[in-house]
Length: 274
Image (cartoon, rainbow, N blue to C red; front, side, top):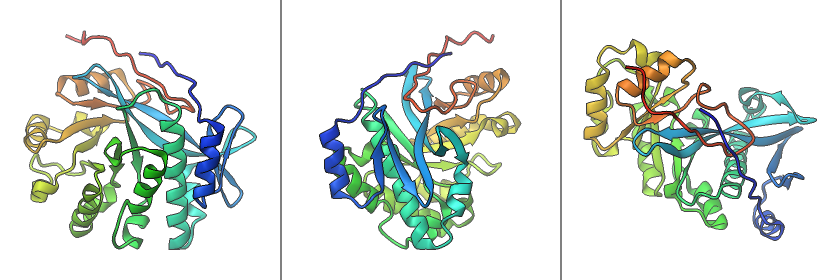
């Protein structure tokens, strides 16, 4: 397992055009990557690759925000978002983070098909009543990226509110986004009530996968709805073996590649655990 990176940076004139068309507080660092500012925080992106077992290649990256001071991590994401005490501040911060991720990802990657995985804050989903994803869609239009190349990761806590979960999936899907939800149950028929609103990807933590006694029926259910299983937070070789043996579709975790200020690729050896 190893990672490789490339160095294709956004053209200056194009970034200046984007700056002039938005009210986001953005700047371009010397290495070409885009940073943003919220209060006294300098925000940037790190990306963790997601590997497809069937395609045997990296098919996307999960984006995470980092707050920097003199090049070092100053605040963790939850600390940054805690600064947004009001709903309107949270909306602005969440949209800023997604804009930073989109610029850094799509202007620093040679791939024209890989997907960007971005999460949304649960408070945002509750405070924005309708048109979820519209502002981000407008920004993606500005930089020439289709919403179908973005996977919206729905926070696990939203599973407690089925009405909100259905509403959010309907909103994002109507705008062409892919949807990723988190498995938080113990039954293989989890979320079948959503029917046609079933997410494109279901995420499960590697530690939960190992403890799940009926993973085969769960995967059968997911695949019957046209969804894929992503095993995330893979930290140990044992968790990796379990994910590959149970028939997971996608893999993600620090064992494969840690989040980095780069667009990394995973190279995974053939299955040899038997």
